[in-house]
Length: 153
Image (cartoon, rainbow, N blue to C red):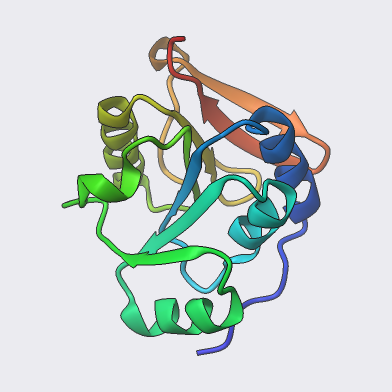
């Protein structure tokens, strides 16, 4: 399986993450798929931060492990997560997750006590409403448009 090309807003998303999480101990991407470039870029910009990617596809993860040895690769399912993978995370994020995953990501982040960033498909919510009443904020940073849920500090 080949890795995909860069998204149009990769640099802007990375700039936001690096600026907002410069002192993060750990950042975890859920459902990395064939696109490890945000995680790789985050690790390059935040060398002291542990960057972990998860997915359920072991073949894809093996490809990522070879292409990006600087990031930790873990086979995990957010519907039945291994809590040790997420403990001490400052940010959990997901790019273009299916709507049913968003609620699970929120639950996981709540248990861990960290922020959540979700970048849906461009110009849509990806089937999830991201309610303001739950704390979601729509952020536009350069070309990157995403939803951000900051834990109460």
